[in-house]
Figure 1 (tube, one colour):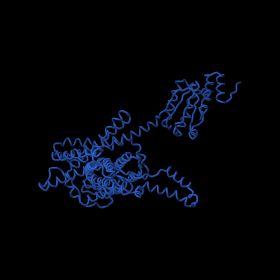
Figure 2 (cartoon, helix red, strand yellow):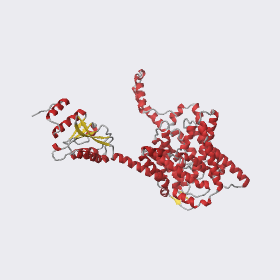
Figure 3 (cartoon, rainbow, N blue to C red):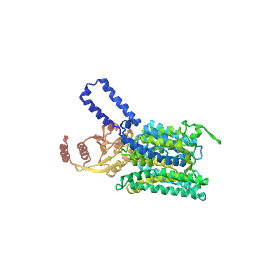
Figure 4 (cartoon, helix red, strand yellow):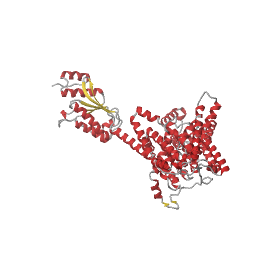
Length: 627
């Protein structure tokens, strides 16, 4: 991994060390004032354009590793991109248009070295929900608008929103997507042609047209799946330290190139078959012209033979897709970033970078793109060191678009479906829900809800429901924080100790008052209440006024002398200023002071005699007057 930026604390420490050097004293004041400013701009440049961070340190060793990884990823992303395009209802060629411009932009602005931008089955599956049955231009406009939304979110620093999406939600979302993608490719394996949105509609259509299935497509698809699974087993040989090193390297690259190999073999079989018989019994992919795409901004006015669409009609047709696609696309990048050794992700920078990839991608007729777990696994296995591998990947895809597009017509659709099924199968994770069932029932319920809703009603609905459930859970924690209410003793004097474990804000103040009053009622309002504020991280004005009202609640009569004392122990000074003082409310900072107030209350209520009170006053270090 390329070097990381120094933190603010590290930069301050280095600046202090430089200032303490003998030579630093003799520098002019003007130069001393300019240095921190240059460092600030340099840090900003490294943060927003990370290529300047690792490029000066680039070495020959890194270059060799990146070149090998880039070639391997390039050969892998070509068949995957074509398969994702078919999943999105587009000709296979448009998948490749998404696979070259994204990596080139991410090489400069990307903040996660192992992320490889391109079409993904997840984004393709969600995109088809909004573009099915519409002109192909809708897909390009969806890409453009998604990029604009991501750039706006990154500019406004709205990346914190994604911190509200928990890991069980992301895992359930990914597993549900894998189920939906596998189901959507069954029709391709059977050679049945239809395109509908939603699992229930797809299952119904497939069952009603099952008699139209083509055995040749099924045989081709099953053979491709078997071939891919067999080559995937070579990973075990590659990871076996007891095997010969050359054999391990050969098996590793043979396994990572399995998608390219099956496409090459299937295309050769189709080419020979067509040369001898004139046609093949299975479906072949269809592509556009074999030239590089023109760089043009997509038009917001779409004209077709049946209907003309204005900009407002386009937005109405795409509906919430322009919000869902950006969120779904960035989720994968965030998840991959959390898997890296650093484990931290600059979400705002990722939003800006992926937004640029989509915005410029739409100008070359690309579908929405993002990172992919399969490409992350391959980049890790190939020893990728820096994002420079994106350059070699992009060159390979451009060469394929320039010279190999005519030969894409010989690739069977069933082979591309097999690639998609085997690639997406790795996203199925049922070990996590089993662990959650054993250790965290609440997280298991969240996972189950997200998984079921995503499978039955679509991943966009499942994501929305999961975010709402997570937000409601957080609101519940704010409204019902952990509050310990316990009767304790201090020198044989009883008191009710209340210990909030977090911030107390307006949704929780009534809950706090109810807990305290219930304990006081059980004690017949004859025991002092002590609220320990040491662990209170924050409090708003409404909660502060609620504590003041709590002291009024502890007054059993209009006379303050007959009320229960409320002691606020170890409250921060800035919180004390928010709380209005009342007759039966006091602040104290030490345990001795608490003991003093408890002694006075015990004397007032007749729980200890006067002699005991005198001894207690001497121990506490204060004098009392006896009439």
